[in-house]
Length: 112
Ligand code: AMP
Ligand code: ZN
Image 1 (cartoon, helix red, strand yellow):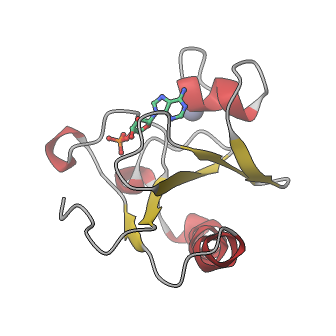
Image 2 (cartoon, helix red, strand yellow):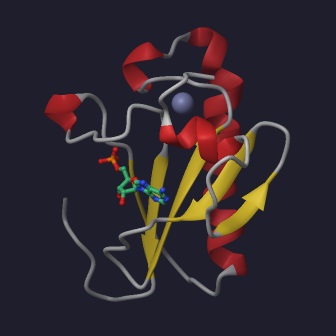
């Protein structure tokens, strides 16, 4: 938990979200500013800043995070999707709590 982190607050239920899925390790919710018809975020509950802060100890968590994407995409009616992990300021990251974007629901998807 990082005191000022918005995704930590969502994970703790202190800030509401449009939740898709939750278990002990992850919370998944719809992006507040979707850029595709379906746009959700897979967020580990543990505060990890970005992929730059991960190592071999996160291997299991990162594997589980990716496996959530197809499971929920299918549940939401998608037949395919795009994933994105912005990493660091140079990588376009705005919220410094690791998350995977999942986009779908349209043939025309953003390239960024
Ligand atoms: P990134 O640039 O990868 O850090 O993206 C952060 C994403 O978090 C953006 O797409 C935001 O729209 C999204 N976001 C920020 N605050 C919230 C929130 N309270 N609930 C849902 N999504 C959020
Ligand atoms: Zn956090």
